[in-house]
Amino acid sequence: MSNIRISNLSFHYENSSQNVFNNLNLNLDSSWRLGLVGRNGRGKTTFLNLLLGKLVGLGEIKNKLNFSYFPLQINNPANITLFELQDQIDFEQWELERELNLMKVDPNILWQPFNTLSGGEKTKVLLALSFTDQNSFPLIDEPTNHLDESSRKQIAEYLSKHDKGYIVVSHDRQFLNQVTDHILAIENTEIHLYQGNYAIYENTKRNRDEFNQAKNEKLAKEVQRLNASFQKIWLLQKDQKVRKIVGENIKVRQIIVLFIR
Image 1 (cartoon, rainbow, N blue to C red):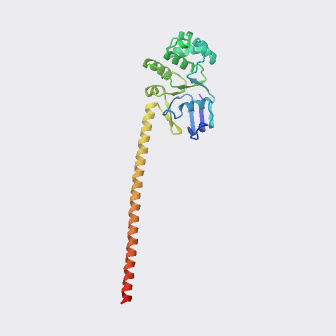
Image 2 (image 1 turned 90 degrees about the vertical axis):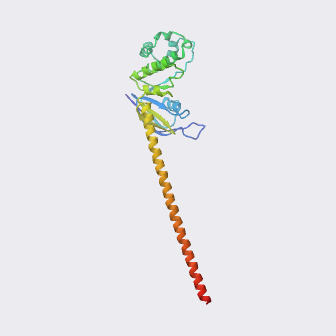
Image 3 (image 1 turned 60 degrees about the vertical axis):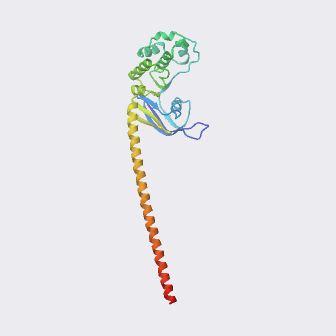
């Protein structure tokens, strides 16, 4: 078991002055099953690339892990699946077959050309590949895209029963509820860590948002009350000044009248 320690990490792209992330500080346990969530374009893939070292920001990312990434880019789809994968990743055949068996997928598909596999089969093979190295930490980017319901359940069951931690990106809430025990939520330029699956995260965030909204409404009412009080004081002071001036004018007129007489 190891940790991913992120300290004071900030990042922006060269063609932009706006930070994608600003001063991130996280301590992630490698045994956790982490779901990475956030709106489109908010930095999910950027965060994975920072972990992989494909992007470099200001600050530090300290870990002793080897990251694996799903989906692997296939160079020669016409090649036999096993040979194509071994051309790119160092692993033993039995290790991949072990993961496919855990996923309840027939290992014989490894002897087919990659481009003859169905979309679901390609996903399952590449996902199994991410777990062949027992010392790696998988970064899984949208594994449920283009999968039917049966394949989603198959992958969810595989991940939920696996003894390894990982980070998974998905927009499928039901899937995230099944395969995560922590959530990393991108909010503005920050990443917040929540304990629990996606449903617990949503409930926690909803309660926090409602509390903040109530606090802001209370503050707005207090500001409104103070403004009204200041307005009354100002009008009172103004009225007193007017009365003073009027009173002085009356006195002056009385003096003038007496002088004339």
